[in-house]
Image (cartoon, rainbow, N blue to C red):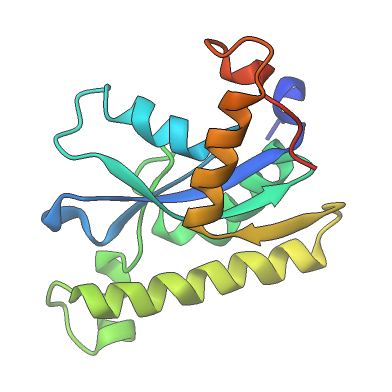
Length: 163
């Protein structure tokens, strides 16, 4: 897969969850210079409930890091043309849960944290120059700081540096 050169910059690979109680098994994994702003943008696209950040990594090459994350999650992907994934896919439920029943939110969170650990292991084994985990509070702080220091506050791409 060809990586877009304009996305081979410092930024974030994020994991978003939707606040819809029927979507607790579904995540969106993507790249952004500002995951908080990105989650707000997604809520304007016709989704019923907003997406909220669950986890993120600050990375030196967003496109490459996102490609790694998507490769780890390939078996969980809903459609090849979308960045949405089931944490526990239907075809894996029997192996993971000993049942085809809908997973509980607690089961989903345990599996999600395991998947995130696998992504991090792949980051460690890759040629990614630098990355670090960022919690949700840090993402909010970063987003506010970028807006305060922006050369052009109406253009998120002009916000301050990440590393």
